[in-house]
Image 1 (cartoon, rainbow, N blue to C red):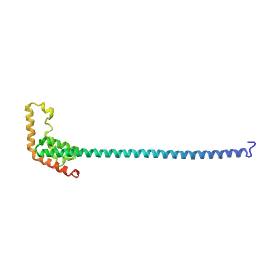
Image 2 (cartoon, rainbow, N blue to C red):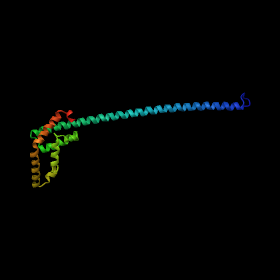
Image 3 (cartoon, one colour):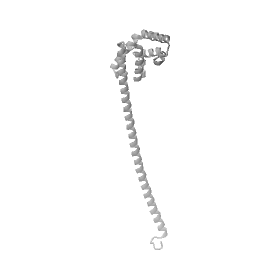
Image 4 (spheres, helix red, strand yellow):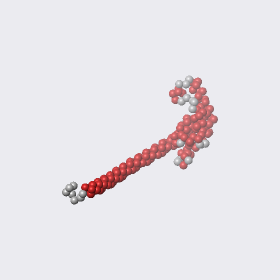
Length: 180
């Protein structure tokens, strides 16, 4: 500094000013880098959120289509079953039990409707009776007793069951407005 035209005091001021400018430039550069990194993170997260939102929409559409197909299958089965019941091709008790299950698949609240309530009653009154392999294991006397009980329920509720079968056909005909 002896050769320098600036004295030691001025040199310290110059160094302080120079380092302050360097620090300002570094903190401004750091701020721009952090801003750039923040923008990149924001864009990446926005892109990911959009991807997730589209996946949710895709899955909702698939679920809606699956429900529509299931309802269509149930409605077709209900129509065939109700028609068979009305034509005496299916036992009314068996038909009632199957209709109850199919209606519950579409909407469990349907069984509470006055036009379909009989299906729930048939189920309640016959659910204790044996079916399939359990029925085959019964003695002939027990089987006969259960058959008499089943026929008594059928005789008592036959007209209501057949009216409910007609209600099923009407329900299917007016679908989907009949759901409400």
